[in-house]
Amino acid sequence: MVPTHYYVILSAILFGLGVMAFIFKRNIITIFMSIELMLNAVNLAFVAFSQALNKLDGQVFVLFVIVVAAAEATVGLGIIIMIVRNRQTLNVERVDLLKL
Amino acid sequence: MNAPLIIFFVLAAMAVVGALSLILQRHPIHSALSLIVVMVALAGLYLLMGAEFVAAVQIIVYGGAIMVLFVFVIMLLNAGVEERTNLSKLAGFAGIPLAVALTGFLAAAVARSQDTVQAATQTGATAPTKALANLLFQDFVYPFELTSFLILVAILGAIVLAAPRGES
Image (cartoon, rainbow over all chains, first blue to last red):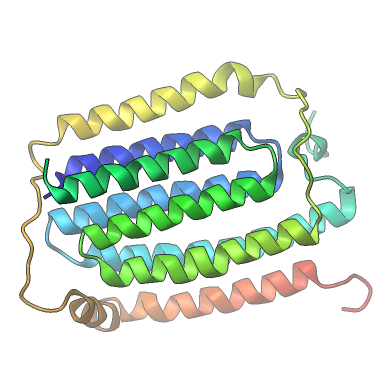
């Protein structure tokens, strides 16, 4: 049997890598993908604790997180298409209307 | 070293390598394919934990639907190699320390709490998917119905955002 904290540590590592990708990537689509990576890391922790505590609530939450991620991906990619249509760039540093 | 532990380490290595590859690849389509590797590895870990339904949903919804949407948008926008700009200096200075500190804090918190969370004992009483369905459609039925509104609003939002101007 795999100890639960192995899963949680893997989840922390994946979340950290997701944060790192979120900070360092310049492409707006890749930044969006790093958000999905962070959501996946949280899902892993949910399922690990669900298994450790022997309750299925965590798995139900994972299903809800997946639904929210799907909705978020739909709206976010729509916004990305709008940004590219208006500014002809995928680089987030060139989308700087609100920047001082 | 028992078999589940070996499978765990293989899948964990796959997930971490995929996540690193997501960061290191310059082309968005390569990053998307790396993310699919991470998701398949996580589905394997869910199977290892006995969460078959979540593993199947992970493959079908994440690997199948969401990532296809990403790849489709990447191809639609003809996204090329990421251009290197250094307009923001903050990311370079604060990014790595903050990300490492976050991972360190999380790992430290986990390491401190590992006494309280013990390894699982398998239930084996009812089929997990059946129990999951009972929970989802009884205790969580209102949140479940609310998600359908959420998806409806998301569809409307996507249509409004991505529809051609001037015709709507």
